[in-house]
Length: 76
Image 1 (spheres, rainbow, N blue to C red):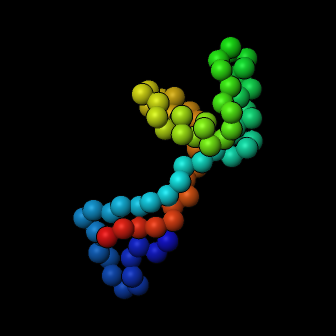
Image 2: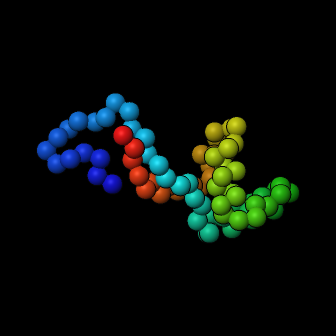
């Protein structure tokens, strides 16, 4: 995603980026394995795990989850 046109160094004051947060299958299986060992309920699928991770009230929990982001658009 090229946010700056060639030859300019203008960075917008406000930048909105749209995208999706996701968790890979390998990370999902590892997270569910750790949850199972600690007696926590398992996530049904990677999508639920990713969305549950970003809704955490404790940012340290979210930071420990292996999340990725796919950005697909910018909005002016």
